[in-house]
Length: 138
Image (cartoon, rainbow, N blue to C red; front, side, top):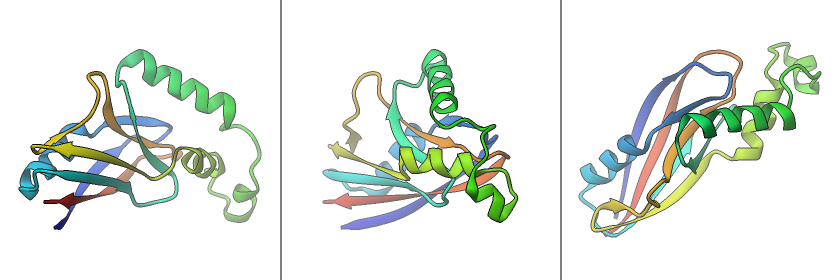
């Protein structure tokens, strides 16, 4: 059985990190599926999804790491073509990736004690993001 749902989130951009674990668990609950996995996918090329220990220190660490690895103030070829100044956003999203798959059993996500599912929005402006949640199982 496959069930598809969507989560809509408003973000601040600029490497905004948002915990979406409850929303994903809610979609699994709603599906009625007890055993399987859930795909969490963000539509768009300037955001990504991963799992982390969602706490303020790590949120700062992630933001600093992305700024060191893919600086926002560097010249990017993408910016030359489109003039939107978000070349760094596309590169950061490419590194993180748009999706994560999490198994579940007895209807509960099998995340570690300190592990949450997060959306990271790298764009240089606030956005409305659509996250596809596909529940697969029985």
